[in-house]
Image (tube, rainbow, N blue to C red; front, side, top):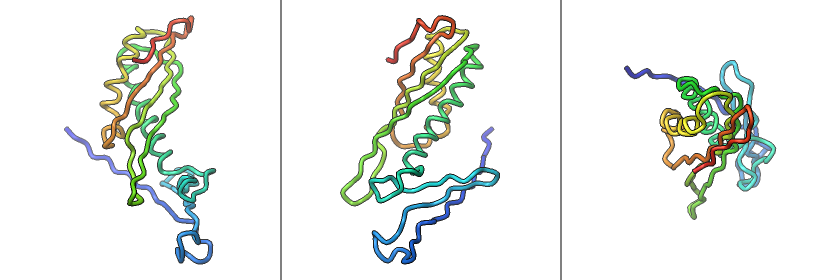
Length: 165
């Protein structure tokens, strides 16, 4: 049985510097992203697009959503498989191509999770990234490849690492 879930966010542009969008350079790209019962996220466009580099931009938010979704799917797969994860971190990278017409699109994202396990087979732990990706709602919603380069560490000795492959 399929179950529908519904989400709602609100974006409020805060970059009116007095002239609105009278010219391309007259307005700021600042905004506030919010949702019920959540703190606001100060957002902007990337600095390359006249944005505030100190604020989150949509491209970073997309990478963060992919990384977090994969992590949550992976932790579920690990728990189900008897792999005891004690630490998880990821540095996600993405490539976006800007087109001549001013548009653009992501061409790929690579997740680089570093997973520490206290119990379970390291090879099994590594293999769980595939079903985690297949069950990640965000990864299944994008139209570009999401690659994985996981590293698995054993907590007891941390001497055994399963290289990415």
